Amino acid sequence: MDRNYEDLANAIVVQAVKDYREALNKLKKEPRSIGAKVTKLEIEIFFRSSWYRELTTLDPEMLIEKLKEEIA
Image (cartoon, rainbow, N blue to C red; front, top):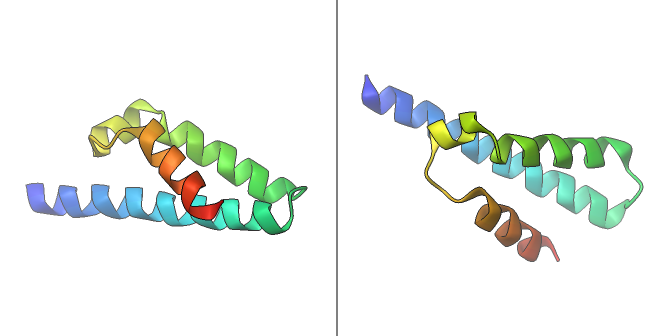
């Protein structure tokens, strides 16, 4: 049972990372994209949430910075 929970938790975080990368890439190409700005903000809120902390021990600020560096 715990393994299923871990797999689900990892999948949620991985999907958020993929969506965040996509939003950052879109903003790089289209800086005025409202949809990408909203997505980016929503995912940053998720990364800083208590729910995220329940899913992983990965530092959210470090993750956000690494993803931003990756796209820059």
